[in-house]
Length: 372
Image (cartoon, rainbow, N blue to C red):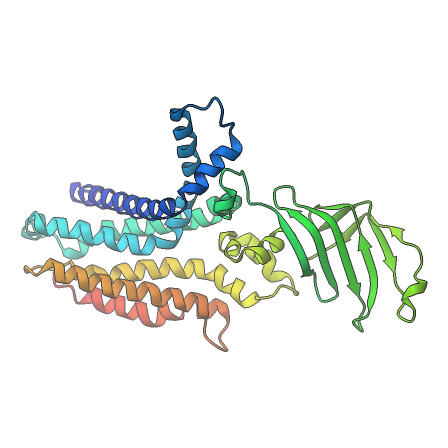
């Protein structure tokens, strides 16, 4: 690595960290100003008001803010990496032009493609980090990221009632309460149907715990019903466990739509393999779309780089505006292609349609137009 590479990388990462921090703090501050009373109420609810000094109260409130918004930095990085990298690259190259450093580089006989090389390598590294973030960090932080402003200060997302959730084509589950942290159903009530859609069995229990491939029942009882006369059903029989396709992950997905974005590839693959899972195409797009998003980020960078890889003096403000318009269009178009898909095209192929058919030729053409 040459001195020029180290200098460009240092400037780029400084701009990236500064831009990321400013956008993240600005977003959090807007939300904080709108919900500051929620944080104060959380401090009052979790700590005794008497004996708490003004400084201690301020520190407790600050800790609540850090606890609530801190995990969201990983989510922010995952969603806005492509846009932030375009901005950081633009600021870096604009600084080189304004300080006449690009003129010295060209006078030394260094190719503009060589100037762009450390930036491209840095973007690839940041996108690899994004994949690791989605695979490791976000699944572990999901209980914290799913919290709303009414759950500030709690170690995980609050439980909820399970209202008539479908567990395959022949079973429906109801529960008074589901605890995501304990993976426990309270007072579950289960209806099972036969092939003719007639109610065949009713299962009740005091509680149910997830054990890997089903629910382990506490004081479980199963009542077998007769199709001709329900009133003559035999007495209930004890039952210890039922196999189920509706696991705690599936329950959280039904409650929080954004939770599926926090699953890793293994969890998404397990959901796809279940025949009764609804929205299989959407899950497939999410799984392959993570690799497609990396490709979109890299190709968008190659498309926008030529706005600043120039030899002759130009209006850098105009170049920055054009870069922003093209970069945002490419990012939004790629995101739409990943989430919407193409009719009659497999999800694994449709998520790569826009990057390979549109962005890739455009990136090659743009980089070939660089005069160096």
